[in-house]
Length: 472
Image 1 (cartoon, rainbow, N blue to C red):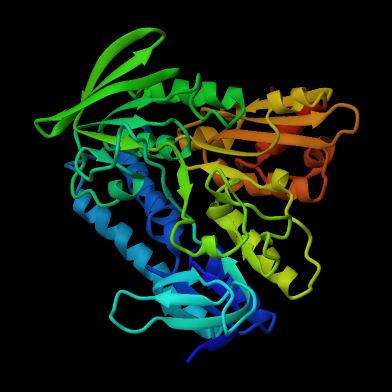
Image 2: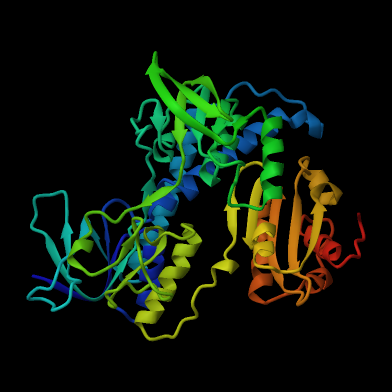
């Protein structure tokens, strides 16, 4: 017998389960259809496990550097099995927490593949959801007033370098390693590539990055790219930009690739290869062919409230493209559900969304890069301030990096804030609030930041933009 709901969400990742909780708060009878585990990529293959591994890499690096802090000790070895065990325990703890939240909010969960059916005896509109499980049970039918697609994404595969779980790995595969390779070639110098390169280098793995564009972190401000490249090279990471892999050979449990760079071809050999060239939307097999929903370059097309061409079907998160960040998916899901419930939500301003890369050093940014602002013909005033002039940064032992503040010289509006250095993925939240409140550089400078803290760098960068620096 078919079950009726106000809302059925296909996909229980960060965007899906947050949307479900908000829907429950608004009084909507809600169900989630999830084929794997609640929490999705972020909890099980992305944000949480990778940051847990990065923390272990940080501790290992700090132990090796302990003599710099006057602590004389010896690091015997890295127990990677225990590193992986800690990762799994933290993931499991958070998974249990998500399940508790779903139960607390009285949300039904169906385990299986959710597929949108076309018009039927249950509904004149496409939207009836069939739940197909791995068991031999008959498919369950759910009849919702609204459908929310939150199906996420998967690592994008290169036809010339298909994943094989042996030598050519995806970021998902990397999380399952039972031992660290001696060497690795990372294809792609974006967020995922940078985080794995940083982590593995700190774990004493020989790392080579092959990036097709002319710089690492190609979506960040150019000064950020320059700084991360310098630091990575000091860490011993080999970096090849404007480079393409033209051939590969797997032999003797290693992989050899031919890299073309500036017209010259060179061979590189490593034990493993990570291909991290973006993520592809999970839109196949969910019944889109039974609807009039538009797809462009593999991504579901939506309006500012995440409605598809079928107005009762919404879509959020990685499957619609855009920034493909967990915190973005969560906000998109909230807006979509509030729109269904006639709450008149404010559309998301993507210029107010912070981006973070958890490498060492960390990178965080919000708003426009300098190049983007110039392309929009803004007259700019820019404040740059180095962490080496901040007392707390010197105390951390790693004062490299800076904050770069970009403002409109005519209106004094903030246009962008770009950071690289210690704990900037935490510090960026102040910049986010500044954007929401439409703060100006002089208002950020006027804000009292406690001393000694890393946050003082906001005051200093703001004063630089105003042309009246104190500590530089």
